[in-house]
Amino acid sequence: MSIKTAWITGATAGFGAATVERFVAGGWRVIASGRRAERLQGLVQAHGADKVHACAFDIRDEAALRAAADALPPAFAGIDLLVNNAGLALGTAPAQQADLAQWKQMIDTNVTALATVTHLLLPRLIERRGAIVNISSISGSYPYRGGNVYGGTKAFVTQFSQNLRVDLHGTGVRVTSIEPGMAETEFTLVRTGGDRAASDALYAGAHPITASDIADTIWWIANLPPHLDITRLEIMPVNQSAAGLQVHRG
Image 1 (cartoon, helix red, strand yellow):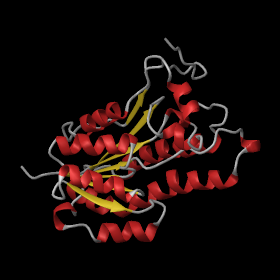
Image 2 (cartoon, one colour):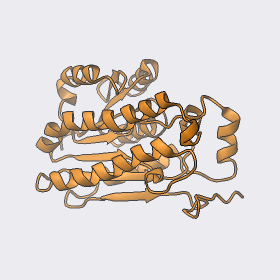
Image 3 (tube, one colour):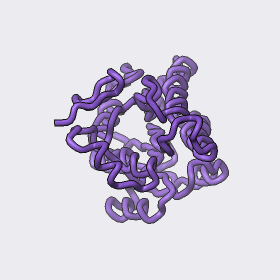
Image 4 (cartoon, one colour):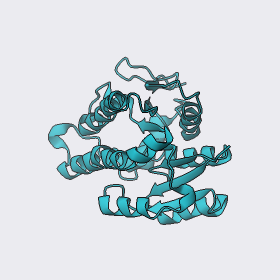
């Protein structure tokens, strides 16, 4: 049986890093891309260059993305799975007080870069009858104060995923949108500019989703029989519901 290869964006932390670990443990090769070269090298050192290939660049840099794809070693050149995980939320202010530069960065990362990497890798995915897993969010379905542009970008990811499925009909390529609720990663630290107290307070007692939960979910989806497609999957902690996104703590 040939070894499969996954390209995981945003692989330096959170869902991405956990997904790298899960797929390497399952016997796959992984292309791990992200901005923080030292963290990517840590993955290579931990698992070996035959299992993990690191690509350090900002996902918004199209030229760097194309250069990384062109420079893939032969063993990593065939892509069986693309996990579009790279993304971020910035700021919690209502729209009328928000920072326009933060809005633009979220759009460039969560929308433009995701579309660019997908477009670039589609020929390889079609050739291998592979799969695409896009990490969206419940924020694309349920509005909340301060969600403004972040929620809009994730609504794009969800709808883009559905439209990809239609366009890829007959190619054998599977497409999934995963839409997590509250998950404890570096997400809130990034969103709040490193406010550890705010992050700790948000997750305290809530038993949130973990990065390994999402990694296990992606692993399950990727290893389903090829005639099955999980089109859209919303995942929340038991203690979070859509009733105003209220959280029961205890």
